[in-house]
Amino acid sequence: MASTFRDWLQEASDGRMLAELIARRKYTKAIEHLLRLYKGGDREPGLRFTLAEVLVLASRERQAVPVLLGLADELIASGAKRKRARRQKGR
Image (cartoon, rainbow, N blue to C red; front, top):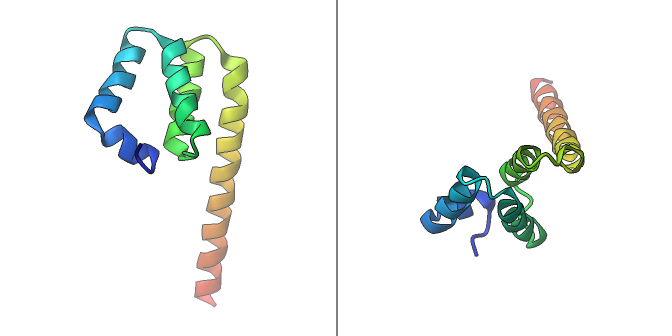
């Protein structure tokens, strides 16, 4: 198994499989596959965003909300850290 979501996505067979599941509207299987990756330790933002997108496509918006909120919180926190670091460099 790839070490990150990006590595995994670049692996042609897995990437094609997920894209194919989504294209064929087999959202439940796509969600199961994404959850396996997530539970396997992959916490990449891209994976979580894709999971949220597929949950919405599957009309499971209530399940997508916590995923998106967690992702938003993480992105806000990382932006604040970078901003603080830039300020300290300017001193």
